[in-house]
Each structure stands twice: as C-alpha cells, then as structure tokens.
Amino acid sequence: MVSKDQVTEALDSVIDPELRRSIVELGMVRSIDIADDGAVDVTVSLTTPACPIKSHFEQSVATKVGALEGVKQVNVAFDVLSDDEKQALAGKLGRGGLPEGALAQVKNIVCVGSGKGGVGKSTMTSNLAAALAADGNQVGVLDCDVYGYSMPRMLGVEGKPPVTEERKIIPLEGSGGVKVMSVGFFVEKNEAVVWRGPMLHKAIQQFLEDVEWGELDYLILDMPPGTGDVSITLAQLLPQSKFLIVTTPQPAAQEVAARAAQMAHEVDLEIIGIIENMSGYVDPSGGRHQIFGEGGGQQLADKLDVPLLGKVPLEEDLREASDSGKPLVVSNPDAPAAQAIAQAARGIIAHTPKELPTMQAPAPAAAPDRGAKELPVIQ
Image 1 (tube, one colour):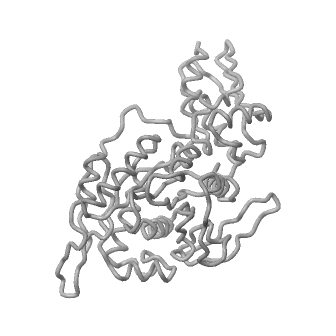
Image 2 (image 1 turned 60 degrees about the vertical axis):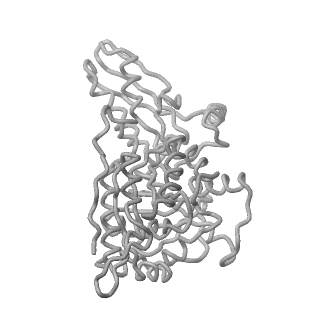
C-alpha cells in the first residue's frame, strides 16, 4: 500500500501558480487519507474560494498521486484557508497579504534586467513582448522601471485603465495586442515619480495582484537597471520567475551586467539567457563597425553557463520604431534587428514551460545541457 510520505512527496511537485511554491511547502495540503482499496483522498486548502484554476489543481494532484504504485483512485476536495491561516502564511512569506487570483492563469513570468542603464533593456522588452505575441502567445508587459517608465510610449498606448466592480485594474492594449500596465498611466504625462522604497514595493505588488491579467502565456517585466529594491521585491513575490539579462558588447557593460546576474543568483531567480544589444553597425556600403566593442554578450553567457539568445545589431530603425510606439518586430519584421529579436523570443519559448506551473515539478532531476553557443548575427 502507498504511504502518506509517498503521497506527500508526489504533492511536492504541485506548484501554486501565484505564490510559485509547492503546496506542501505552503501548508496547503489539509489532509491525506489512504483507504485499503487503494483510494487516496486529498484535501487542498485554497487561498481564495473563487480560485480561477481550481480545475488545474485538481488535475495536477490527481495526476501526481495517481502515478504512484498501488494507487487505484484519487479523490480531490477543496476548502479555504482561514483568515488566521492566511495571515500566518503571508507572514511566513514576508508579505502583507496573499494574492487573490490575478496571476493564477499566467504561465511564465520573465524579468528583463540589466546591470546599468542605456543598454536598450526597455527596447528589448517591448520588442520581445511583441515578437512573442506575433508567435501566437498571449502576452502582458509590466513596467517595473517606475522611475524611468517607458512602456506606454514604446508600445503606443496611453490613457487611464478601467477598473472592474471587483476593483481590479484592466490593463490597456498596446501594439501587437500586448497587455500593458505602467505607473505612467496614473501620473501626468512625463511627470517624475518621487517615491521611497516602501511605496515602490507597494506599487509593484499592486500591479501584480490587483491587475486583471487573465490568461497569459508570458508576463514580461521591464526591470529598472541595477540591483535595487524592485529586484528584491520581485524575488520575494515571484520566486519562480525567470531572469533575462540585456547587455552591450563592451567589456565594461558586460562586467556590470554580471552584477545583475549575481543578484539573480543570490535571490534564486533562474537566468534563462543573455541578449547582446548594439552588437554591431552595418553602414550603407556594407561595412561592419563594432562601435561598442565585441564579444561581451558571449563572454557573459559563457561565464554564467547560459545561452546567448540573440545579438541585435545597432539600427536607427529600431530606435525610431520604439519612439513611434510600434515595435520594429511589428512595423518591419524583416529588418535585421527585428529578426534577431524574433530569434531571441524563440529562445525564450524554448526555455519556458507551455503549461501553468501547477503542472511542473519545482526542478528537473537533471538539468538539460544549456551550454552557451555562439549565434550568428543576422545581417
């Protein structure tokens, strides 16, 4: 007969899609009862009674437990954590409260960061989001660079987001059908945001938990440069999100980007790859110029043992498209820079799950070989 310890071990690979942790670690497994005839009854406590992915929990528990030898039938029941239990769990996680379903249907969260400003991180974010959407994915973008917000302009959207009767904010739709949320929608045009750290933390948490994101294949977060408060906040709120680093080829930028990678490692965020922006300039006569140096992206990828997902050439069209609010991958998908970004987007798809995290184990038994490989520059 299967043991309770075996059932608990199987349930450890069922992940809460918002808290991004195992339901066993979160204390959400209320009870396990094993009958002599091989039937197993599991009761799972939800954080909210209106959990939009209850069926995914049910399917995942049944699949994981049903695969155990000796189990003939799996019955899954649900209840809801009490207010005291929610408060205790929030305290355990270092949060003020628990989310109520806003991210429950988001399959993958990818943070796009850099060690320093000026490397084109926001340009890469907007174009990667548009490229993922063009590939048939449901995509959202959260502008976490609160002090230097730029997603409204780069994705060509402005206005005040509507609010539902349940007081959930509806993201606006930008170029390519990408859902967008930014502090820029709530301040006067080009107004400076002057906030201290605690206000910043609260704003990011509200954008994650009080926005009606709905079903998304990818939520892309445009991070502020460096390794400050926002990075720590996101690591706390989204411990299983992925991290993508943007750098330029020059050694100085690569060295600074390595610090962002170090921060990601320290807070246990998985780095899925590197994008080298401003990789080279091709003049009208066909001559190639390494204005910002050469090889920094590959060196960083080799150092971190992650893929170099793309080398994006320096093009005026890329800058002009971003300023106009229509990403280059949408306005001119055949441009060399657009093709390089589309290639990087395909790399993101290859390194992220296609299902909700409730159906994924926390970590594979053996990590696949993701050794860094040189990618050709599209010209």
